[in-house]
Amino acid sequence: MSAADLGLVALAIPAGTVMVLLMADAFVGEDSKAALAPIAGLGLVSAIVFAVTSAASGLTDRGGAQTYFNQTLVVDGFSVFFQLLFLGLAVLVLMIAPDYLDRRGIQKGEFYVLLVSALVGMMLLVAAVNLITIFVAIELLSISLYILAAFLRRQEGSQEAGLKYLLIGGFASGFLLYGLALIYGATGSTSVASISRTLPHLGGDNLLFAELGVALLVVGLAFKASAAPFHSWTPDVYQGAPIPVVAFMSVGTKVAAIAVFLRIVSGALAAPAVQPRSALLLGAVSALSMIVGAVGALRQTDLKRMLAYSSIAQAGYLLLAAVASGRQGMVGGLFYLAAYGVMTFGAFGVLSLLGNGDDDGTGIELQRGIGYSRPLLGALLALFMLSLAGLPPTVGFMGKLFVFEAAIGSGYVGLTIIAIISSAIALYYYLRVVAVVYSPTADSEVGRPAPEPWGVSAVAFAGALTLLLGIFPGILYGLAQRASLL
Image 1 (spheres, rainbow, N blue to C red):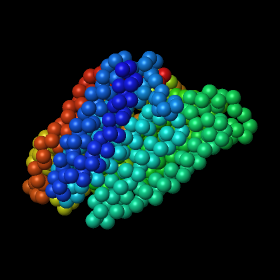
Image 2: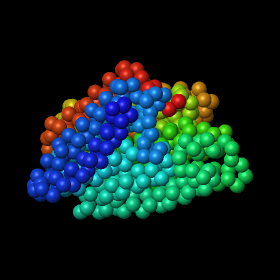
Image 3: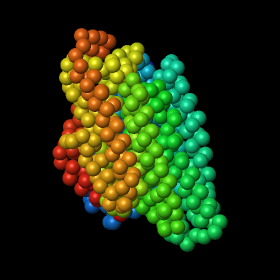
């Protein structure tokens, strides 16, 4: 079995796990639905073993890559890199979810089925090299998350989150689908490789249709990445959805969407006919996201909403890597995407462990004194805030450094200055959380049950990676170099 075949097996196992979970759910009692978490975890760990074996077998984008199913999916170093990231994220979410669901009284088998289904959509999306496959993967991912966002169905805020995500998501899908149709009409193909070969030779109306299609494609993917000005759903959905869902959604959807940007930018959008305009459009979205996210987060008093606006700014930094293009931008983007996944999961993971049975307790002031009453969780929350702020010696600092360096190297000095100013603004609201965490109060323990060891282990692991990859960035940077498309 070739390295690429092993990667395909890693993609197929989560899909099979969904089927197993559906059958197991029928035989597990209502009081034992948490037993589905280890079943799902076992399947995903098996997929991780195959993905690691595939990567260790020498699979890169310059050797061993292989297409499947009539050239609609590709297994290469790029796709396996993200599949490992998504699988690891899903396993960590499965470690924190059962305790949270029990405390909120929503322990249902459907949660695990939908979670793994969304994972399959993410894994398909980063491996897709056909416009139709891209759309199908996005819809599989989106529909699963629409339902998960409303999983606290007795809570008005969760119902609002699911409905808003569904309506705005459907609207964005219309833009995306129309853009894909225009690209197909202009080039006569749905294959990303074929489109890349055709675009340089387009002219007249066909070039106009292709450029309009690219613009609509950017709109659709920017919505999934919660990039401004397509971000309006983000704060409300993050606030209303269950915290484990937000931890999964905030990382998975953004990383998958930016990964698609990187794959398309390295291929179709690199064509001289459309590259200047596509770079201008991506640059504008990147700059606006950094500004809107940083300014919006300043006014928030709820930590989930603050992290939602923070994620909008993070989308701007991530898109900066796509704008920079070139090998340095690609490698920097891959590094920062993985870094973003680790530190964002960690932040939401800590929040999921600090809530009580009736309320998530995510107000910033409600975290006062956590550093003293819960030293480990307080230290981890502070660490993730510092990493999101981009301070050394964390992985967030190294990620921003590589992306900014790539942008300056590609001549985007103005965008880099905006990114630096946005990062400086972000210091205020991230450090404010750290200050609150270490402000003593006698009431910090009220209503906070002791978290389960599995959940603590998950966020502690994310914290260890945040420090390890910040102190020794060469580990992740080497993996990003192997996975780079350029």
